[in-house]
View (cartoon, rainbow, N blue to C red):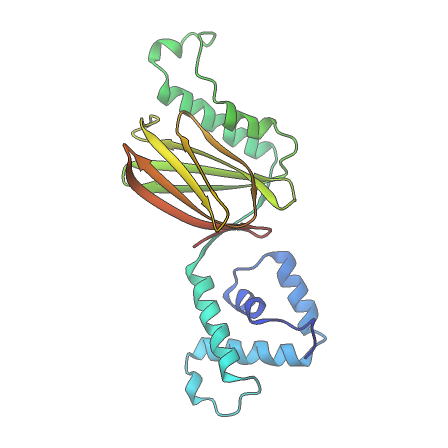
Length: 233
């Protein structure tokens, strides 16, 4: 075993299937030339599938290491993962439709016809499709009681992201809603919902989003953003 060998997290990621194509390819290339890691992967995979750890007498890797891997696999299987998707014309179309629907839902009927009448401008969401620096995105929907949260995260292949959020209640933007984004160990940012709330230049990290209405907490969403995507925690 050397420094390039797989750690418990990599083995857990591979066996649980919660892994990107790129990382999976790197692991396969490594175990193809490393008997130690191949043996470890086979042992952990066999024990995980049978779930009878104590019945195995001849194990070439430590029991403690195997148990750690099994616990990581269980955690990974319980997590919901959203992987990055490339920004393309289809995303722009989706966002355009989303904006159109939101304008319909939040605008009095007299403003819908004729088209040239003034309508609300959704600056933040519209900027996603217009921002050429954003190369990939993640779209997440969460429901807190009767509030529907739409979250879009964009990234340009660096270690920061833009988080944009809107919330609907009965097809309208609710009043007196506050969104608080807490970065693990590194600060809090809180904003009132008007149309779309934008949190800019967010480093890859663990976050907790708290949704409040009329100063009463409605729901929480804890997640991690990293180079692989978004992990729901």
